[in-house]
Image (cartoon, rainbow, N blue to C red; front, side):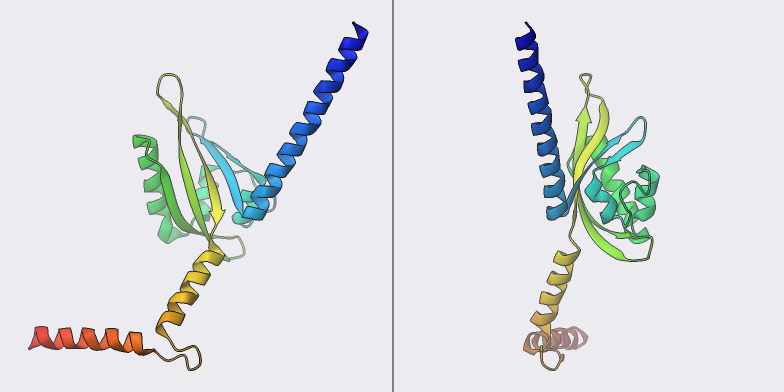
Length: 180
């Protein structure tokens, strides 16, 4: 009996170490992928952020207590109503929530995030929480902007290129045609 108990204890310890290793791998993979997980308990308004999300909002881990009010305060004022409307639509309809928005860090830095989430319902089909992921897409936005600029402007002179000239010429011709 003693040997069985020792064996069970050792197996449990090994499983615990394995689970801790899995948790550490998950945490590191979120960090490297610039992805964080969140869940928001609708009734209690409790918000959970994985460690990766703190940095996406410009905070150190544990520096603030996540809350929906804090989240809203961090979202850029011009994006706030749209993000809130998307979350409410998700809560009301169960549709996936997928938004790109800017956040303003405490030091004024602007970052772009993409949030995807959905609702979790209880056995009575009542929404109890929203869960999802957030990904920092700031570099992707900067790259896309740079590519748009390269597509329309000469990289050496910075002047509009032939594509822009043709677009502007077509607009001017259309305007002249409309105005006769």
